Image: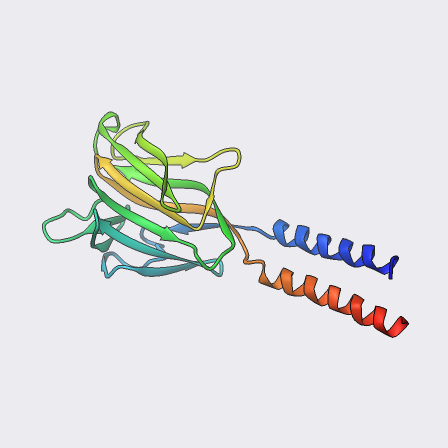
Length: 202
């Protein structure tokens, strides 16, 4: 048993490492033609969108009030009565990846439709603000890519909130880490097998 146990523990560690290595880079595209939400129009919120076998649930809000999701050729916005279908001040799009153990946000591509110096937004991860009053660089009415280097932002829920200016979300790239239940089951099975082996030897 003393010889077998280290082998079993090593196998479990290797399985854990392999599972982590299988974290998949996925891009959700929200420009048309080709948006993974669908054709241009207004969609009830929330909406589930799948890319590469992974799903995010998108929710549109105006402050604390529910709103609808707008799909335009240049990206996603927020719609309610009297609004323009963009992400305006205090409006938000939330992307939830709850079925996964964790998601590493790699980049957001968005359109700012006014002079960039006057456009700011907040980014929340799992309800905590990680970017506050973030200024937009570059020119107005162009795509802007916000790329997160280093460890990035790890969580299950990412919310883009307009502060001033108007925006549309064009794409979202994440590294999805699968839920580790299968690993735990494998480890439990290996330990159980070791105990059974020990009982048969004694």
